[in-house]
Structure formats: structure tokens, C-alpha cells
Image (cartoon, rainbow, N blue to C red; front, side):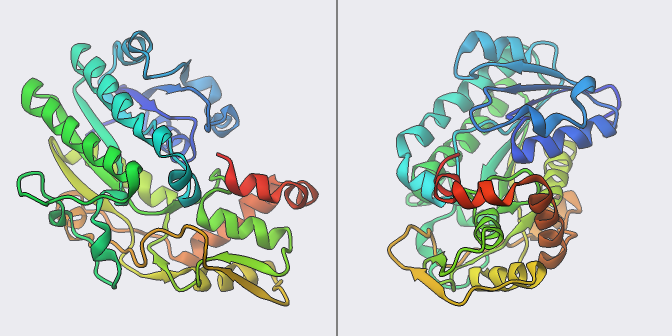
Length: 338
């Protein structure tokens, strides 16, 4: 697919992932519109392309705004959502539940306005939690909409994302709109905030927190995936999937929090005198990594950056864009608010 001249809407385009996607689409020659309520996104994230895009500010749960945002658009990348790190989605389930309304309003407006395709940013939180106690890579067929008991998502946020996938497929079935869903696994990178694991750990290390506090026992694993690998998967899904099929976007490796910490300490050339493990804090599932067979077959996609490369680039961004004294003074607030 040639993005040159394509009229593209990125909902949540001022967000961490959304802003990187916007930059890539602009570079490919697309005419990009961003729709964002700026509850967590920031105009500063779009500073590299500010004069080359249109920005619509408003709440996509309002039908009038969703209609305006999707008018004269060919492709929608739907990333807008009420979300945050593990602490946020555990503490604000009602906020996360509003995503079900948001998704359907965007899908309906896009369909009525003749949008050609929608690519939906879903989540690894759609996967059953009980199979993530041991190390078992998650494959897309572990979720079924057709079998009794085929779904058991991770908290309200995961259920909302799962319903978003099913709703999007319904719009494909009824209106013929091309559709794809990408299940994003633990993205990180520049512009992410401190409510998410890797940036939270970087903030604590940058502020030289000692004792250094870790949620859980540190042995819980995730497949931390660099943001540019995620955005590439979204573009490839829009180019190659039309029937609402969901694909994983995440690395296959199980990376423990303790491993991440060691990389961060090494790159900052600092380490605390003591590690304090907070086993009463919410940590989510025990182990999570992606089976990427389907993404490789349908999209030709595989992640490109290693953890060390990704952390190096992300940490460089964090240190250069955050005042150390401010991080020290506001650490607890930064770790818990979107």
C-alpha cells in the first residue's frame, strides 16, 4: 500500500505510540489528521510534525466530534483509549470501561463516513489470565468468540479491548469496511510516561531512589517491545489485513523486571545500596510473551530492536528531557498519574 496522499486519521495521535505513528505516516507522504482530547497525550509529542498535520481536539465519545474527525478520511488508526500502567487499570476500572463506548462511536462514525479501513490498537490484556501463570507464549487462537468459555480477559481494560475487537469485526461483517486488530504487548520508548513499567524504573533510577522499590518480586516477566516495532506492525496490519483478524505485536522473549533493572543501572552507571520488593502492589499476570507466528506470516513482521538498544534510546531521551530535581520531588505523583 502506498501511503502517499492517503487521508489518515490517528485517534489518540498525541499519545506515546500515536505520535510515533503520526511521524512515520507523515514521512510516508500521508495527509494526517490527529483527534485527541489531550487527557494523556501532549502537543509536544507532535512538535516534529506540527506544521504538517491537522489536529482536532475533543472527546471522541461525543458523536458530533467523532463524525467531524472521520469525515473525508480513508484510513483510521484507532489508538484513543482511557488507559495507563498496571496501577492505573487496577485502580480505575470504570474509566477503562468507557473504552467500549468510545470504540463503537468511532467505528460507527467511520463507517457512516465511508472510511475504507480501520486498524484497532488492541492489547495483550485480551488474553486469558489463567494461562499466564507459567511461561506459555500467547497465540491469537487462544481467544475464541465462537466457543463457550473462549475468553477470559485481564481486568476491565482487557475486556474492553476484547469487545473492541469483536465490535470492529462486526462493522466489517455488516458494512464491508476493511478491519484489523493489533494486540500490543508492553510497548515502551521515548514519550512514554512514568505509569508504565520501564519508564517508572528509569525515573526511580534517575532520581536515585534508595532503597530502590520494585513492585512484586521482580521475577514477573513481560515481552517489552520498542515503540517503533509496534508502529510498524500497525501500518503493516492496515496494509495486509481486511477481515478483522487480530495479530500479536510483541517480542517472544520473557524479560523479568529484575533484568530490566540491571540494564538500566548499567547504562546509568549507578545502583542503589538496597532493593525493596513490594509484593503487595498490583503486578498483573506472572508471565507474558507473544507467539508472533501469525504476524510473521501475514505481515512479514518481526521486532527489530533488542532490549538493550531500546532502553539505551529511551533512557537517553528520558535523561535529556526531564529535570532530575523535578523527578526526585514529584516521583510518587509521576508513578501513579497518567
